[in-house]
Length: 396
Image 1 (cartoon, one colour):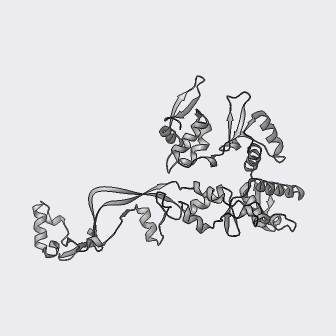
Image 2 (cartoon, one colour):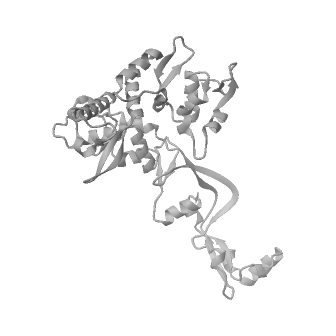
Image 3 (tube, rainbow, N blue to C red):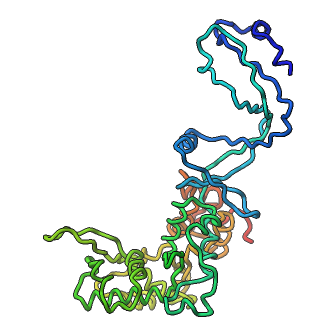
């Protein structure tokens, strides 16, 4: 309580003893003293950058997300941040009514008594990170959508999740969550997010292409509303719309009578689906035979290309004959060390071209594939001059 009995002259005397020029200081002085009930205040300090401060000042909120077993993260509407406890040797004082230097300018000079409610050497630090999304796929697999006629089947009694449910369980911002749901081709059906059965989605896609051929439309100009409004459609409107969005792109066409929304089927996405259909569950496939079968399976007018299989399949060029196998990036661990361990367990040496599709999503903000490889892999050159990467640590 000594701070309350100190006078302005005593405070100025202390400044002079510290060899400070009083003309460089504010005429008003804040005298600090410790509150008698300091132990009654349980406070956690959080360090925020200027962008986060503006986010809060605009009336937005921060959400702390994570189960008991998770490391907590903080989410804004569009970003995710790690929440870490940091220790400092400095004493951090919490004063509810402390004034900044610019608030003390002017006046005849006075002594302001300020009560310190808390002293801490710990604070929470926020660092932007990748969202933790692997759990999302696991949750949605509890009840996969295979068509409205099977919704009451005993195989479809697993839990279903709304957007609110998922936000409470997944460590990601709402924007990042919705982006991942689109990436997984999840459909929002009857208020719930559902993964769509692979074969069922293929049947819907084939139905759309058959309808386009029957109506003499073009894959590059499918009239969206006409397709969705056909009376004899055998699939729900929301599922047809979802399939068009998954394997095509929306586009507005300017016509004589006005504008019309159309969908342009993506050659790469459609060809990738048929490739996965051929590769799923068959192990290794003779590459030459696969390429011929794949070419014959896609719609007339579409061209297959191995680049369409980035992050979906692996080719073993050392095998005789060469073989290809299904190896989707969506089935790999989310944690970087585990991801690299799995990759190097699958293949001892990787070229940059082959490994990039499988680690690109691990890059943090401003991080590159090259810096990731420097951290987790060791580079070497084969006798033919090819640069390859292998693990820095023993494979588990």
